[in-house]
Image (cartoon, rainbow, N blue to C red):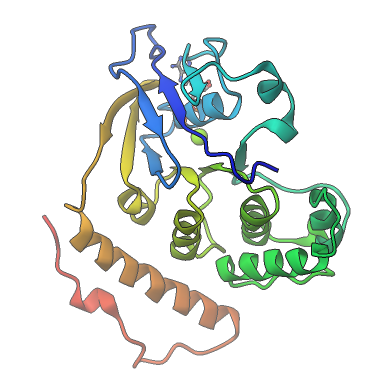
Amino acid sequence: MNIDLTYELTILPGRDRAGNPEGFDRIVLRPGDTLSIVGPTGSGKSALINDIEVLAQDDTATGRSILVNGAEPPEEMVRDPAKKPIALITQNTRVIADLTVTRFLALHIRARDTDAEELIAKTIALANEFTGEKVAAGMRMTSLSGGQTRSLLIADAILIGQTPILLLDEIENAGINKERVIACLRDFRKIVIFVTHDPYIALITDRRIVMKNGAVECVLEPQGRESAILSKLSDMDSFLWNIREKIRSGEVIAESTRNPIKKMVIFA
Ligand SMILES: Nc1ncnc2c1ncn2[C@@H]1O[C@H](COP(=O)(O)OP(=O)(O)O)[C@@H](O)[C@H]1O
Ligand SMILES: [Mg+2]
């Protein structure tokens, strides 16, 4: 476990799809940093996140290199998944092993100390802060929904794997309370990168990498200038979340349900 280690990641530029050099010098990521990657489909968002995940050394289609703590990462960190400080969770991430939630988490707890039971309970409780469809200890991993699986894997990466760097590729679609996830990842001082089409996630992250034609087009740092619209988006999101949960539990949505959208100011 990498309990006391802090990591700094540096992305060095590669080439766009036409082979032109990317127009940035370096992008440095430190603990607690949150970034989003935005851009149209096919613009190279997943390729960038994959470069980070494989710790590319000018050996992928993009020609980018990733430094860990300012240097080329040691060979064993690249080869051995257990030594890699990075977790990638995508929309398609599913656990195919036919295990219960408890057994799956227990397998991740390498040092089987007396705390194992408590750590499993804590991880399930954290996952349940992220998802409205509750995860229970005895459920089978293969029966979890996409939202439940992603919630559990994020909680697992935070509490059990203690992974310092999380890459989340378009995880926003349904079943995850984004606000809770982001607040929690910040509290735990993770480096978090979201590939996203979700305006709330794009606006709440400190930096926004805009992709075009396979290359980083620019890195935006709005520094609070978007906070007014962000709080509106947050209201709208929690409104939607509540309605979704009520529908899920079989309620009829009454007229009186507070609607923040009515109070929306349109920002030109
Ligand atoms: N800089 C690049 N050079 C060459 N091919 C690239 C580059 N960036 C992305 N690609 C390729 O283009 C395709 C689309 O990129 P992808 O990252 O999947 O886009 P997105 O995730 O934004 O939809 C992929 O096959 C990817 O490998
Ligand atoms: Mg993609």
